[in-house]
Image (cartoon, rainbow, N blue to C red; front, side, top):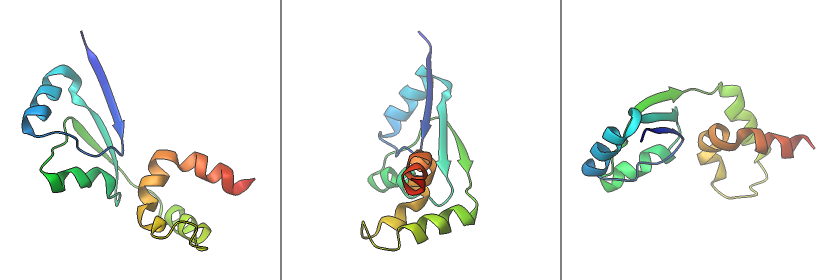
Amino acid sequence: TTINLVTVGAPAIGDAGFKDALESAAVPRGGLHFTGVGDPVPRVGSLLGYEHAGVEIPMDLPSSSVELFKRRNALGVVPGFTAIAPHVLYTIGGVVYAFWLY
């Protein structure tokens, strides 16, 4: 059975043994792992010794997108929320913008 794996902004969730098993089971080479430049979430697991499997594909956002996100959250609806702006914009950005527009 072939497992095609694609993750977007996901944290690492397993140790070296899990990584090796995933890389032998999922294609390509453990899956495609899209990460946002400046997104802290994909790096959180490494603090616990976890490792990412697969091929990392870094994505960058225009600084104007991040600045717009920070301005729209200026009311402090969720304290500290702007710190995770890159993660939100990469993973659910379209939904967030839809609510701001209407």
